[in-house]
Amino acid sequence: MSRSLLLASFNEGVHRSMAGNHEAAVQSFDQVLAADPRHFPALTAKAFALKQLGRTEEALKGFQRAIELDPDAADPHREAALCQLELGEPEAASLLMNRAVHLNPTPGYREAAAIEVYSLGNALLTQGRRPDKARYRLARQVFELALELSPAYVEAAKALADVWEHLGDPTQREHYTQLATRLRPASS
Image (cartoon, rainbow, N blue to C red; front, side, top):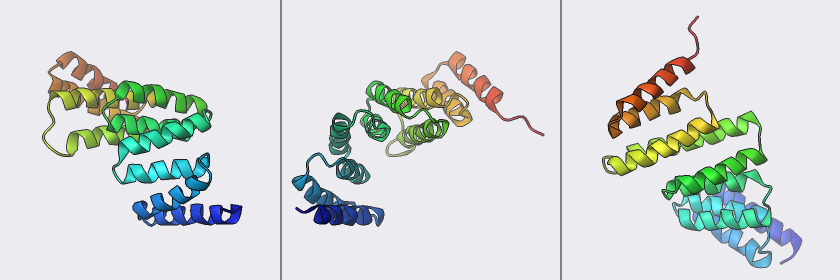
């Protein structure tokens, strides 16, 4: 495939993905990757499209391959961490996320990552069947990661207080309730 056809296929995949047609986007990115298996943008874009389709394990493999190709790129680490969280692997996610924020230490990047992690924790507790103790324990780890990424994240502290209440630990609940209160901006 010529360089111009490769670029055209990649751009087509991007447009399809942006339009929400992730299945077709994957096909376009596959065309690029068939011609150049080391095409980093196509690899990460395909993994992202797979993630949007709910094919998290396949997406994780794509992000891991991208990390192999460019270990200094922060975004594949962050996206792989988010996949690990969705797959119920908070320890692996924490390692990947810490690497991502080490590679991109800007405060905005950390804050955005914390918000994404917090959103996954909320989704864990609000989607599907009623949360059981195992889901609350996993949510605790997810919210702790969000608070680690952004130590002033009031909502993450509140979520941890709620999770500890459901887990039956009033001491931890009170700790995070107090933390959330201290993190609140002062009223004028």
